[in-house]
Image (cartoon, rainbow over the protein chains, first blue to last red):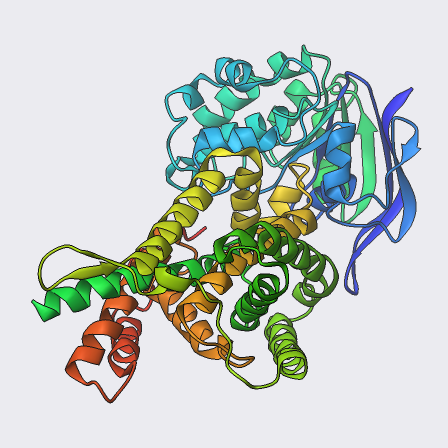
Length: 232
Length: 289
């Protein structure tokens, strides 16, 4: 059975409609990549799954139960964790304190300070550094680690590569198999198509708030993706 | 030597200002809420202590056993009902709501206790002092006030730094929305912050009631000192609030020595000078997101 089911949701920001009837489903243990250009509705989709935005129509179900009206803090104990766009670290707290806050509503599981530091060795030396003074890559790794600290069943990753040097993006994506190996379901949103295709079991491409292409990385051609991505 | 004496007395007085300002500092730090009812709430606690001493014969300092939980409960209810709603409106709403609350509390106290001045009697302790040098004597009660002020601020600081809930408070202060993504219920955190703030203002209220005579409107003066202490120290910094309280305390006592007829003028001038030249206070939070 699907762990996450999004059923034809509409999402608005005031008068502006960001999502038009998007549906998706992710099976337990699967990695789904949602790709698309700026403004395609990718981040809004993740926010709606995490509870920061409410759909005006449609439903969001997690493990068979509708969660569309639950506030974000009640979704975390169910096992939904979002690494938000822009990382959103707590700037006045150290890296380690940020991780500990991630464990505020922790479920039992493999993730703790030790395993996060083992997965992201670059954080290990930076644990007592203020998040505000950490580099972009350190912040991104810490933001993912912070989301893992609650031992999520579903990890939502928003624009992991944004604003980072390619070598750092490589490092962070290299840690993804360690995460999925724990059985964690991952929904990753990316503008960087190449990285998304490499880690994903399935890909869904959005354009202006609608799904325009779906498939496995193997069955989709470059041209199909380019057409869907840019809408030309 | 009388100057040295004024400075020592001022530092001790600073402990009371800091005690009064700590709750204000916490509420502003955690939820950017400016609580204009803070002074009136201190006087509510003072009356509560007064009533307890009059009617139950409880020793004055022992009243905190009742006053702390009552004020904390009041804080929790106030935040969960009124203030959380106000925080969701525009920026001005909490200021208007707490201002209105102050007016209501003051008039309620006026009805219940008339405009007569009261004070909580502690007997000999009020005049007791320790002679340090021939010129400097430290009052036992101001010393107790100061020590309690320092302990409260140190304890609050440790709570925020070391406990899980304290971390959740700081996280909520840094980024409320990101904190909800960690499973933190910000409304609960806010209710807890206000409960702690009012518990502390409860202690401050008892000390005010013992130190001076008070009536329903006495809170206003203290509210101004508390705000000045918070701003001198830097918004959201607890140790800064203590330092701010001590600077104000010294300015008050030295000012009284220099210009006996102008009351707290010097303290207010010191505050204005710091606001003009160091608008972010002595210990600004270095974070800019």
